[in-house]
Amino acid sequence: MRDADFRLWVYRPDAHERHLRDFPTGTRAKRDVAACLLSRVMGIGLVPLTILVSDGPQGSGSMQRWIDDDIENPPVRADVTERLPPHWHGFLLGVDEDDREIGIAHSPHPALRALALFDAVANNADRKGRHVLVGPNPDLGGVAQVWAVDNGLTFHTDPKLRTVLWGWAGQPLEPVEEMMLNEVLNVGDADFEGLITHDEIDAMRHRAQDLLEFGAFPGPSGLRPALPWPPM
Image (cartoon, rainbow, N blue to C red; front, side, top):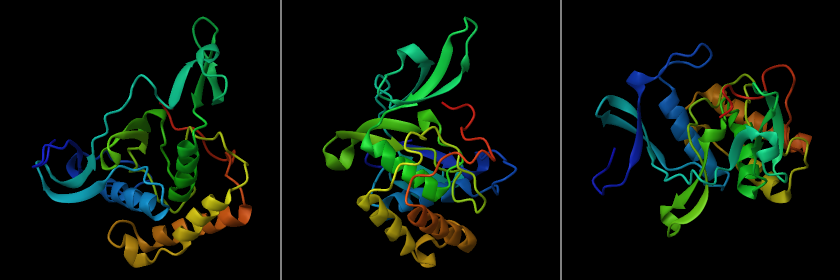
């Protein structure tokens, strides 16, 4: 939908939210907004501007600035492994009907590394490949950047991290990344008031503290699926 200035937005009404067993119904719009706020707290600005609305065409929900995605140059790809960029971080998914290996790979771009850290703090349960876009930033004169969309399955108190961005698993944190995590530790409950619960805010800070103490990017635990399904 378009606003009064003819800017495009993605509108997600609460009324159309799909019921999930492990996330409370009616909370995804607020989690989307909380993810945008966390992106700003960490200083990465990878989540498009996302706001709550109470008077949308179909009632309350969230609105997120539309991103003109560069579909010709996606930062995450699934394909026959021999066609995936060799310098990207790749993972085998299986084989096709012709016994060719099928894999998924993501760019080593620093913005995706920042997004991987963001997802670990947000406890993102659904970072699919098509949730990572490349498009213009209207606030920077249209300069292209990485964007993270569809952030509604986040901030659960239980470990839920499922992502296609495992390329930095086990790699030591850099000083700037430690600064990002320290910003999360400084978050007060009032900053996320009305978006996620106090327990979820506390769990977010604990995840940031655990990452600082671990000193590296997390890897798959082996206790739950590491990839969302479908991965793209």
